[in-house]
Length: 339
Ligand SMILES: [Zn+2]
Image 1 (tube, helix red, strand yellow):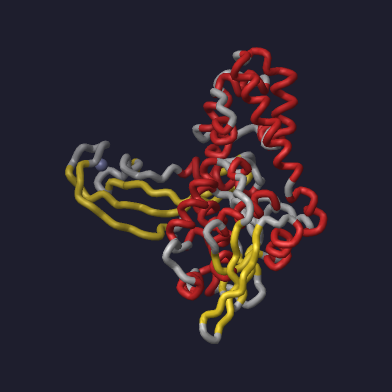
Image 2 (tube, protein in one colour):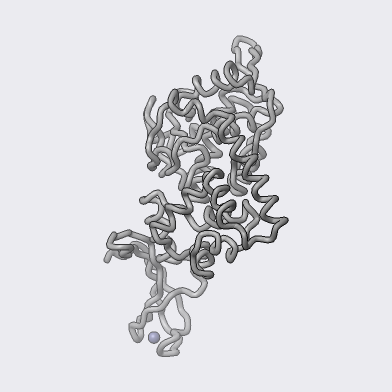
């Protein structure tokens, strides 16, 4: 065990009850989660008088929670916040949700509060993220729900199914698929969300350079706060800052095939820019609450940034500075994101 940082303080030791020198120890420790060693930061105090070791009651560090978070990240499992959101999005209580899935009453409450989910349970949760699957489940096993609630839920899910299948799903083959990993923010590329996010940022008009950065910040900020990206898009280091991989195709599809955005050339003296406008409303129901919150925060944060200032700002990102032209920027850099 290697001690990284030591900061002593005089205080009462809870063990020997003497006013003494307490050594503050910050180090890392391997926690074993399902047979897998996960290195996490830990901190505690050691009394130099009696040698007792104890936790800092004020510390927000929960090594086990961090280890679980990392384990879920590595295995592409849902994080507790996502599970809670999935349930809340459909207006179901924890008990109703458990009953629907045939789980014990307390199961969901445990998962939402940080217990590591069983991998079979995780698969089921992943499956019902698709509104088609949840819809079938409600139709087959939702009898216990109040009639009114059940009907309303079925109506909402039918709409959601229609939205998912009328929009970009059909382009999946064209844009290719990659498995979720650290380069995609542990999400599968989700064109529907990507396209809706683009439309969202185009409302009111946005320059192409700025649009690319807004998408980058939305995905990286969401990853920073919730351990998964929004769209599953990979971002590439280009001269003008980070941009979504294949961004030209995405924009062209939205402009030419979907007629969801239109593009105008604008002159800034010797420089010509492309201004993007939304011609359709962004369908926000494809996003979770935390994703919507992130999109709004990013749009608001950069409200007064022009194309040049956001480009300069993005050039200061560690993930940009430490990558070269054409390289994919890992979401691991989101820890150092400036926003
Ligand atoms: Zn002591």
